[in-house]
Each structure stands twice: as structure tokens, then as C-alpha cells.
Length: 562
Image (cartoon, rainbow, N blue to C red; front, side, top):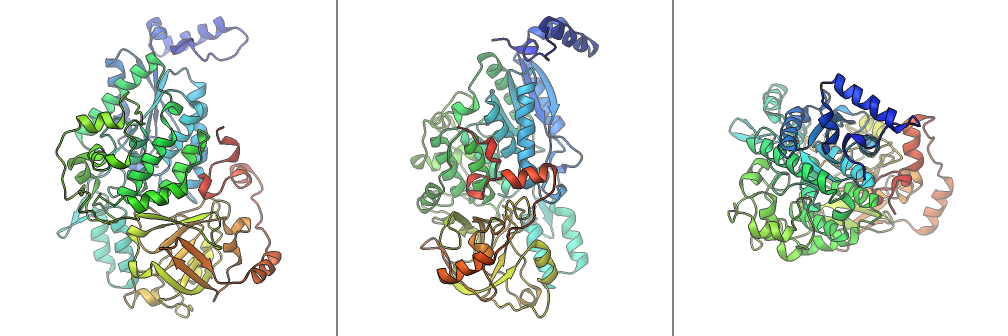
């Protein structure tokens, strides 16, 4: 098999001419003919001025390049679509599949023997893994790392859990503008991704557990020397993979690896967004992600990691406290220890050699968990026939069993317009419903599921109430919030049929979400329902026409593996 810069030549009908041209352009860039005979490692960089979390991506790429050269291969850095949560209208989720397609096509088009994927902010690692699995070229991931925690008036602050807490206090009138501004300056004190167990940290832990990162890599802060050392080691390993031709992504991504990911997701009380991303990642390999297995794992595996938003600490504490392999060691009776990793080891091998030290205050022992079980639960019922998710570890136990009248918001615009109306017909018993915010409805399934507490209730001290939607929720958020209701309202799912005053029952013990309206009345309402208009053109039209529902990962149906 042809490797290096002699591979994947542009098609002119004359391969010798194509190679002659490529050599000429390389010489113009200062390379010698020796470069043609070296293994090539592509370094996919997400550096972008519109992605401040990835500000250090160029330095990560430089350290990777150093490792590649030390191992005798040649590094080539190339860009991709870069997604940041706060800089992507209307939501970065809408563009995740576009990034995945970009990653896949560039990996297949360029003369690479292996690729290093630099990711971090929420949708980048999922998109990279989706694309790499479809391309099935030797691939290894390194994340940019998390921020360090901020400090303000004696308290440690973390983006974006404390962003939400402070904003809620400001909305409720218990925090004034100047105090909010002073805290704001310390919320994001360094480069890197959110330093709590939000989606970015969760997906880094998922990538390492699935086997796509070097052990211990996920937790190193963005501005630490460990981050550069891990990047260098990743480059060296990528060079070895370029020579050997493996392992390839589909060698690593197995049902056992996915179950291991579910175990770790529950044990870290990770972001519910990971459910959607794991389903999409699995789907690219033709594997169905098992939501019922995830739920069962949650009943058996306690939350051991004491990090915000479920706990009190930060990613830098997790790293110093033993890192992810130390958590694997706690969970070894729940993991498939034979699952293969990108460095050639198994999870069992790593556990056996990992340093014995562990900070019991951060990575709790099994007999002293942060939460005994059920970090994330999967609900079904007549309101969510294909499933819904709730993060119990971030919810209010008194609301786990709840029944109340619905208050329906038909769109994000409707929510924004009415949520703070002093005459809003809402009480603490109300179940707030947001619809048409799912994959098709928004489009893009934004992180709007954690509906704000109406001011008329928040000003009286109410902190939480039951909220449900076909949208997602940030991993940094908290509250009794039911997410990913499927099928979504915009496709005619039962959520589209809910009316103000309908009684909704949440039964987390029985894993049921029930709309207390009889079948005949629902059939009558369904006959009156009309689908929303579709976008006229472009990527948004492609999305609406082909996107799958949440339980299948919101991927494009034509990209699913077989």
C-alpha cells in the first residue's frame, strides 16, 4: 500500500505528473525529496479566533509535531471547522455534523498515514470521532484541556456552572450588576474548556475511556506542562500508528468500549449531551447505543467524582487527584478490562500500572460515593415513546415524583417573550414545557432545556421546578430538567399535542413520563396538527431532511455506518 506523500495523488489521468506537481509545491515550501519517503501524520487543528477555549491549539499542535518528528515521521497541520458554544448561531449542535463531514472528507482526501485530532469545546471531539470512524484511518485524540478555576471573594468559580448560578441570582434580584461584573471577570481566568464536568470535560473523559486518547490525557489543564507533554507523547504514538497502520477507529470502538463509556458517564455524573454524542459516534460504526443499558448501569454504578455541577471541585483537582485511570481502578468490577486502547494497552493494563495515589475527596471510594446511584436516568412513557433523559444527580429529589399542570411554550421566541410576564399562569407545581426546540424544530436542538425560573417565582426564592423539552441542556447546568423528549414536537411527537393545563406526571422511580390525556383526545389533536415549514435551501435544509432523533445521535441518516 502506498504511504506518505506519494499516496492519494490528485487525479489528472497521469500519476507521475501528479507526483511531479506535488514534489514541486513541496520544494516551493522548502521541503526536500526526503519528505516524500517519510510517514505522514496529519494534525487536525481547531485553532480559531472564534474559539477562545482553543486559544492554545497552536501550541498543542507544535508539541504534537515535536513528538512526530522525534519518532521519525513528518507532521502536517491542517484546519477544520471549529465550533464554540457561545460563538455559533443558532447553536453549535447544528454544525456538529458539518464538522464531522469536514473531518471525514479531509482525512480521506489528504496524503496521511495517521491523524491527530485536537478537540475540546463541546461538539469538536464528538465531530472528530464521528468523522474519523467513518474514514477509519488510524486516529488519536488530544484535547486542549480545561481552564483553571477562578477565585472571587474567597470562593472558587467555574465556567459555566457558576455562570448560571450567578445569572439566576441576578435575575432573581439577589445579586446586583456591579457584583455580577466583578465575579464575571474571574469566571474564565485562563484559556481552555469549562473546568467543571460540563460537556467538554465529559467528552474528553468519554474519548479516553473509549480508547482514543493516551491514558491520563483528558484531565490535564490547558495551561499545564502536562498538557504539552501529553501532546508530544501523542505525536510519537501517532507516528508509530502511521508506520504500523493501526489500530484503526473501528478496531477500538466496540460494544464493550461503549458500555465502559456508559459506566464512566454515570460515575462522573457527566453531561446528558454525551448520550446524544455517544449514539452518533456508535452509529458511525453501525452500532446502536443502548439507552436501556445506560439506565441499568446508572442503577448499579454510584457517582464517585466530586466535581461541579454535581459536587464541588474542578478538573484540575481531578487531574491532581489521580486522573481518569484512578477512577477506572475504582470501577474495575464494572468495566470490561480487555477493552483495547489506542496506545496498544487494555484498560486493565493501565489500571495495573497506574500510580496508587488517589485523592479520596475528589475520586470517592465505592463505600463513600457522592451519589449512591442513578446519575442519569432514561425515561419512556406516552409523552416520550422513544425516550427522554434526566440528570438526577443535578435535580431536586423532592421533584423526582411529581405531578402538575403543563405550561406550554411553543418556541424559544415564545419562551423569551413570556417567561417573565408577571401575569404568567405559573406556580411551583407547574410543569413547564418547551417544544419545537428539538433536532428538526429549532433546528439544531439547542441547549435551551434548562428553562429559566420565571421571575415571579424566582424573586420569591424558588430555585427549581420540573421542566421538560425536546431540547438539550448544558452539562454545566442543573435542575429537574427532562431532556431529549423523542420523537420531538416538530415531527408530530406527543410533545406537539400537549396543551396548557394538561396534567403531566414524572415518575423517576418507574422511569415514566406520562401525559394524562386519553388516547382518543390525543388522536383528535394529532389530526389537527400541521408540520412546520422547512428551510428553503442549503445546509439547514439538508439537516431538517436527514437528521435523526436524539436516541440515534442527531446524525444524518445517510452517514450511519453498517
